[in-house]
Image (cartoon, rainbow, N blue to C red):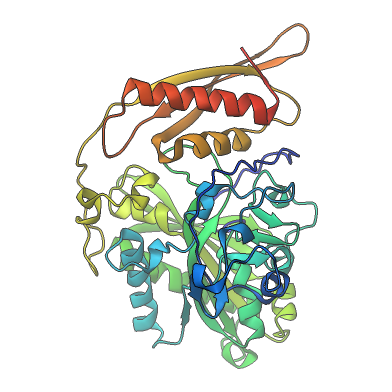
Amino acid sequence: MAALTFAHHILFSKPSVFLHSTKNGFNTLFSVSVPAPFLRRYKSSQTIAAASSLLELGGVKISKEDVVKDEPTNNVPDLIFTKLGLQLHRRDHHPLGILKNAIYEYFDTNYNNQFHKFDDLCPIVTTKENFDDVLVPSDHVSRSYNDTYYIDTETVLRCHTSAHQADLLRKGYANFLVTGDVYRRDSIDSTHYPVFHQMEGVRVFSPNDWNDSGMDATLYAAHDLKACLEGLARHLFGAVEMRWVDSYFPFTNPSFELEIYFQEKWLEVLGCGVMEQEILKRGGKSDNVAWAFGLGLERLAMVLFDIPDIRLFWSTDKRFTSQFTKGQLGIKFKPFSKYPPCYKDMSFWINDSFTENNLCEIVRGVAGDLAEEVQLIDNFTNKKGMTSHCYRITYRSMERSLTDEEINELQWNVRDQVQSQMNIVLR
């Protein structure tokens, strides 16, 4: 399990009715294999263009208009659409691909190729797959438009690789790893990006596995899980000190976090636990027990490769891409330049529907990866009960110096979009 459970600590904002649906007119097309409900719904869609104008993968054609729509139930911006299908985790010379393959090597070697590997599953999933199948409560804030990218009321860009767990269990897979790009509306800083990559691992046991162990099913699975993941941590980080921390995740019980002492501080590596029986029951495995873990590839790669900014993973600059080699884990990134930042402040009176995620979506929509950070630096409430926020936006390119004219134009566009779309009053 990942995303909502293991891969990160998530702080969900309050639900908001504000939707970001600004469209910038890209003509880019992409194609992925999609889940059956999505295919049935869009096969006859009038938005699908002629076959000659579409890319194809797995026999399914999808246009941008199938994903980005100027409708109130859709909040997928153009910037997010441009990331679909890039699959950084499948590039052998990319830090994320190198890390994924190193984890594959560990499981292939220690489990005699028993784990099935999936890294090309479609990121377009149903709300049932993304939420219901992994026991996310119907009123959970993670379902809000403030946190998740909705294509329509029944279809989303997956928030976590756990969205495929139930389907794979139903298909009979007992040991599997799922790697993929996941999507979440998020803040803007050096460690957060609305598209990132996760890996999930699941192992299912039958009564024959634990009957002769002297342990009950849950204890047996937890013992096997910890042994497996301690070995993985040593494989990636060497002979490091480790500790287990009891935790809570909605989908596992008991639940744990594995931390290692690395570079003179404790680092959370992943979250994990013994899978809730209800998930196994829904997957047709009522008599079994299973463990699951989830980890964020960017988070570990930033530590292993000394990559200081999450935006760099998306860079096509050869000064970045040429530094990494297939099969060489932990090559230390050498910064090729440090261009100066530019700071712009913006103050406004907020309303009841304001959320920081909505603000960050607008900033990203205007500035793209030139936006390095959005930080709340001041707030106060006046005698009339009106609350003011002041945000500092840091603009910086990782590849060149920005001109004053560029930055000023970006900032004015951000101000205009914030005022018109969020219905707030600038100060």
